Length: 498
Image (cartoon, rainbow, N blue to C red; front, side):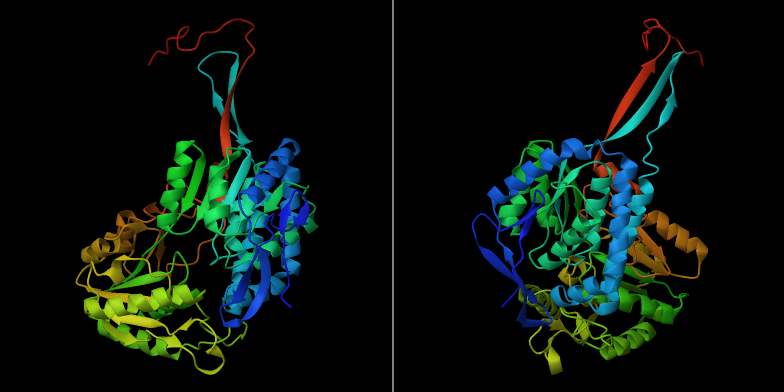
């Protein structure tokens, strides 16, 4: 009998008001059920928002250092339960064990970063243009935050959103992906164990079409944070724009790694293998394009294909596995559909490109790591986000052409360049139009204390991670204190001489 999970609303675990449920299954073995989850609707969201709104009144008054201390305790508990969380992630999401530990560690790091920020939640002090007057600013919470998180980083991304929101004094309603609901429940269990007051954190499971849209429409939610596709992001922005609701969007990517003729080829191959095939290519920062200068193209491709073919595909909880499954059958079909598109466009399939069903992988959604060469700028496999282990290799003649190709897509999340030329490295940093650039490293590897996000269709200008995440969940309040004992008229009383 599959374990039955519940929503968490107002400090209580409750079923969906409809009584309906949905299944979460293992992508590595679709015959196995992780659990049954409440298939919630607008009524459940409204109840959660009401609980969050009620809890906000006291939560915002708690000193920020004490809110930070609670988040530090969350980090301590996550450390103790790291292996338990990682094992569940291999089962429900399909990440291999070492990556699942990394995902969990990102959540731990984010908790401890928030703990530290609780002691430096600074405003600013500015000189006034008048005598006997002080100008200062404070960071104020917005209210109830609606958080809609994806399945590919089922611990890290909810913590990226939730912990800054909570430290800032907001209460939250979390809607996790329906592909990874058990991990969200596990995270909320930890938050409860840490001692958060009832109503501060609320969890509502269910589809985006009902639960997600109910979050967008609820007038008492003041800020929405979403990570997912650009298509859904546009819908969210249009809905939230009607009521001027604050919204942060972290969307798609079509990330590229440039390798110039002077680069360390072996290091470049290691980088692209990790960037393209880590998490089975299911990262918004995954290396989807490899732009090679013609002098090293053939040698690097030869090494890359050999290494890609030797990667071990297997059950993600097996420590020996290099590549796990993709998330579900729909994703598998989409990825293999793009393989057919690439062939029809005239690209050359060098390896992979098919569902892998050997051994104990027969009941899972495994895709063999795939490399195309002969890819031209403008091909669909070069332009569109595939979100799977498919790499397009583009040959270029020069550094300038490489930059043009890299920038020639609608996304601008992550980028990478391998070169020993310091001048070209810095020139690339200046000319590449992405939110993140790595030099002599793959397109993945973001750190929790630094801003994360992109340009163009990758988002709407906000940055998760680091100090910038707190800008999403706070309002600036400017305060003037006049201790002159008389009426001073700014911009009228004083003429400032240059």
